[in-house]
Each structure stands twice: as C-alpha cells, then as structure tokens.
Length: 298
Image 1 (cartoon, rainbow, N blue to C red):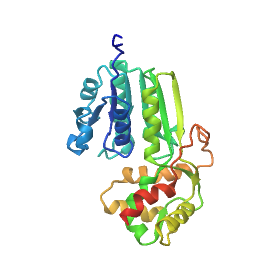
Image 2: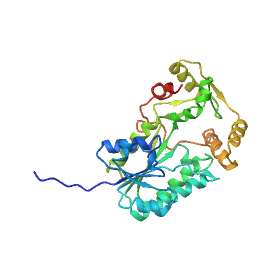
Image 3: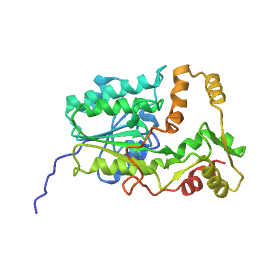
Image 4: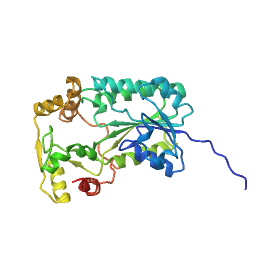
C-alpha cells in the first residue's frame, strides 16, 4: 500500500514555558505534532521537549519577528506574556497587535487565544481589560478563533506560600464571593483539543471553569483538610495590598490593574458571557491539585 501523504500541520505556541503552554506543547508532541514555539529564552525549555520542537527566540511584542516565525502556520495558540509596561493594559494591546498582524499577514486559519472571564466586559476588570482588547484585535482579522475564558488559576496560590504556611489565604474579594477556579492543566487540554480540531469555524468563546465555583472560605476549608493544617480565609483591604505592591516597585497603573480584576468580579452589572455548563466544566479539583502540587512545597 502506498504511503498517503497528508498536509503538514504547523501549530505555533507562545509562552511554552508557562503553566498552560508547557502542557499544550507536551500534548501536541504526544499527538505526533512538531510544534513551533515562540519564547524569549529557549534555555528554559525542558531538553526533552526542545529536541521535538522548532524554536524561535523572540519578543512577542516584536511584530516583524512574530510574523516571520508564524509564516505557514495552520494554527496559533496565543497567550499575552507579562510585560514591563507601566500600563499593563497597554502591554496587552501591544502584544495583541503583534498577534493580529501575524494572523492577518500569514492568513493563519485557526487561533486559540487564552483570555479570561471578565474580558467580555471590555472595561472595569483591570488587567483583564487588556485581554478584552486583544480579543477585539484578533476578531478583526476575520479568522476562525476561539477565546478561552478561563477561571482563576489554582497556581495563583503558589504566590502565597508564605501566607499559607502561616495559616492564611486571602484576597481583596469578600471571603464568601464565589467564582470559577481552574487547573492550568485543564486549560491546556481544552486549548490543545481546539488546536488539533479542524471541525470548528467562526468566532467562539468557551469558558474553562474547573469543576466548581469556590469562595476563598471554601478554598481555605479544602486546603485545611488536604494540607493537614488550619487555613483561614481573610479579606485584605485594598489599601494594604496597594501598599505592599508599591513597596516591591510597582507603579500606580500596575497596581490598579491588579486590584481591578477583583473589582470587576463584584460589579452587579457583570453577567458572564459563558455561564457554567457541560462545555465549560473541567475535571481537576482543587483538592487533587493541592495534594499533588501544593502539599510537597509546604
């Protein structure tokens, strides 16, 4: 029987060393794809992954470099990386323009963008507003696109290890305010599935919301039983968070971008475009993640 040659896929991933991107890259390799990776420093890649990928070291804000690296792409997974911009929303817009130029100039037929719940509001969500603007920039290309409206990452708790060791977990949100919490691994699985599928067309938004909505009080209870230590939830006044962020060198717009993400959650006029459903619910529980990832660190 003659070998049947099929068109070669070129799937491009940005931020492949992140909590989501690293797993997307692994899944694509396991699916038989040789992905193209965009990142600043290839030395950060797992050597086992590096040899199975095509790599472009670049700044995602360098439009010309991104256009060159994505030439011939059949699909793109785009994540806006953190920037050093004094205004984080402006940084998102700069990255979004770079992605949109690549999609337009290279006629990339499918894009999966890692967005967030709250991006649909387009204003009032601080840093997330920049993801909303990026959605608009990508939409304007006319390509087939899925915006993943992700919940609150379990891995955000890793930034609070010292507080957890002291028996506290906190936020500026009221401790009984419930919202979607999700494992980055689950986001990666949804992203990889969309990248590999050619059965969808047009513009889509898809919630990626974990198995359940949780309040910080419920999170504290789960962590207490999983970690074997008493954890209490605290609502931290905005002025204390702002002062702490200022101490570590953040500017006013950077601070307001962080605080704004929680403020948007509390806006009574906000109605999620993607309510919890079969499509938006993913399997990994906070209890399972905390036992596997958080517990060994404490």
